[in-house]
Structures are given as structure tokens and as C-alpha cells.
Length: 238
Image 1 (cartoon, rainbow, N blue to C red):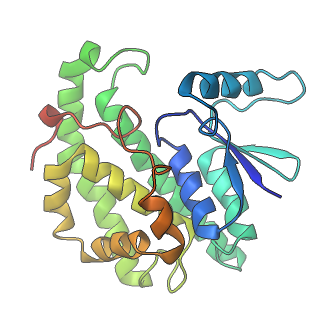
Image 2 (image 1 turned 180 degrees about the horizontal axis):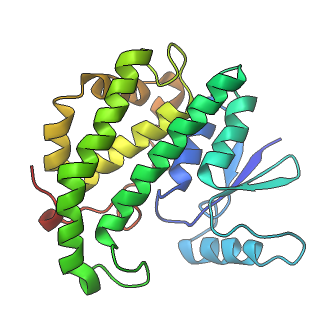
């Protein structure tokens, strides 16, 4: 059975956390909106599916169609995939720990997004630029070192991966988070990563996974642009 992944076409966004898990697992899936002939028809297909009268729609994409289920929320989808495709520990305590890591990653992803939209998602960046500058300064100086320092300590205590000797979906998500921070805040990211050798090693380990190598170098791996992670030079500083 091939999974169906539904997410906004044209941006990696939160859908990328699901794609990485699917690609690393080697399972068949269809990225429905991205498989459409063009972005407009992909968006229409997504909106039409969410408005279907025969199922309760998710609040927002991404969602995964699998085994007759429609599963939404990144951490929820990854919990499902992790247990079925070897991307989570076998024991309950281990699975809860990996889910805990995933939710912590989600916290930082949300904060990174709110840097450029601190007032309202419905406003443009230009409409809230002074507030974004204040939020970015706090994010760079307080939140980035706090989160990255925490993940570094976890890896120092656990080993090569967040769950120890075995890679999990949380490691893939942490890789995507690091890639996004590198894009959005290259100056600050470089300075902080110089003090986080464990994170540097994890980022390299995921980037060179045989199961991901082809995907990461393909056109299916969408570039950062107008999604969660955005690069505004005025918001970055060492």
C-alpha cells in the first residue's frame, strides 16, 4: 500500500518532516499536491480533499492517508510511521522519549516561524517588521542557544542519536530544523554550531544516509523560500 501525503505545494514547510521519514523508511508514497501538473491544480486538489463531506478534515496540512485513516499533526503522523517502519524504539519508554523530542523540535519550529510573523500570521512580514526585528534579536540571543544547547546535551548523554545507538524520526526532524536555521540565520547558526559538535555530527550523519542521499540531491527536495524558515538578512546577526 502506498501512503498519500497531503501538504501545500511549493514549500517544504511542515510536510518535509513527514517526507524525510517516508524517504528514510523506503516506503512507497504519493505526495499528492506536488504530483499535480502545476502548483494551482495541486492547491485545488488539496483544498477539495479537505472539504470532502465524508470525513472530518484536519485543521491544516500535513496529513497522511494510511490504512483507511487520515492522520494529521506532524508528531502524530511520525508516531504512526515510526512504530511501523523502524524509526522508533521498540519499547514504550523509548517511543515516548522520541515523541517528546519531536514535540520539543516542534516548539522550536513554531518559534522560528514566529520570528518573521510575531504579530499575526495574516499580516505580511513588512506589516510587522519592527516587531520582527525585536523578536529576532530575542530568538537569536536567547532561544536558539537554549534549544540547540539542550539538543547538544541530549546527544552528549545518549550517543550518536537522540534515542541512543538507533536513529529515529526525531533525528530526521532535528536535521530538518538545523537545515532551516542555517538558511534563516546563517551568521548566528554558524557561531552556535561551533560549540555543538554533536549536532554537527548528527547533521552530517543524516545528510549522508544512503536512504536519503538520492532524495536530498533531487528536485523533489524543495528549497526553503516563503515557508516556516525565511531568510531576511536584517533579522540575522552573529
